Image (cartoon, rainbow, N blue to C red):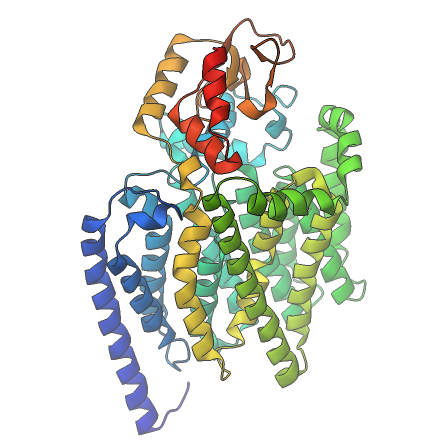
Length: 529
């Protein structure tokens, strides 16, 4: 029980009243902003669709929350309300203006991977590559069958929003174990930092998204073991082992990160915790006995691209800043600035903790967990091309949020709050800046339905969602940039399909202009057709 003087109690009471008042103001501005919003994908993407009052409401919300972070009273209910409002504003913004989630066109393939399991009752790793690690796909198919939903594609649009709360639930446990009982409000500060820093497009309906959520839960439990200084926590260890087994059959890179987590715990316990051995057995057994066909064909390529960071940096940093139109290059620079700002926050927070506490064993453990995921990513190298940088950033976000909290009790708290305010527009530009190539119109959805109703197999040249939602094993999809010209014809190596379909129009022209600054590409293909 925290004892406060009368003056302190009055100040805390006043702070709460101010926070409630600011929250009410923000909530009043929000519906007004929605009525003024309209779809307008401009130079910096979807941010042009939202009025200034929308961002003013979010700024007020962050100020209202920051007032309570250092309160000695438990303000969890009010802080959760504010956090819910923030997540809703950030992740449902596309629906407010009539757009679709980021990466919408091509992620419909994941609905197709799940639909196959729902329809046939089994996996086909020889046909569908992603079903070599079917853990998440099987779980999604169970959700579809139990809930009675018409199709897995129904989950595509709400999935990123729902996953944010799954992440934050497990991350809240992480902060609960790393912070003292009288610092519960700081947990929400960490969740605010995580939410605004999580600008990447890697949280859609997929295997790696669910695997990442499980990885967060594993991190929380391993940190709990580290703090407790007990080598044997039977229940916690059993859960971690089960989670490790699930990750091993869900996503290969995330399972390697789980092994890295286990190794850090092994070192931290001075060799007394051998959970890393079990993780290694899970991953190796699945790779040897189940995914044999995948590695027989792909292992040489994987070994060749391992440690190839030049591929990662070229496609992840250099190419977006030099290839494409001015909009894409500017958005790429904003992404780099956003990432660097949060990395600096984490670094300064670590230095502050090191200076003040000489680095606690918890700090060192979290630093070890974050570093281990980076090392795994380096080993994977060029196999994930540009996506690897997004995966690295996503994997170290818990560490960024944890060390960012350290600044709240320092003289840099005001600077951190200013950064979070600035991060609001940076998030929208970073996450929704490429919406010109992600937005799927109602005409495209109607065209996809028309296509699937009147075809049963074929080779499909598309950037959209045609042939992705149903009977995916009967279609082979690839994009225009994999084609070459042969005697003024669109040419590709012969395949087993009898028909080839081409989806080409204004959307493809806009996307080529955005990605490669080459609108003429589509015009020429129109001529060939």
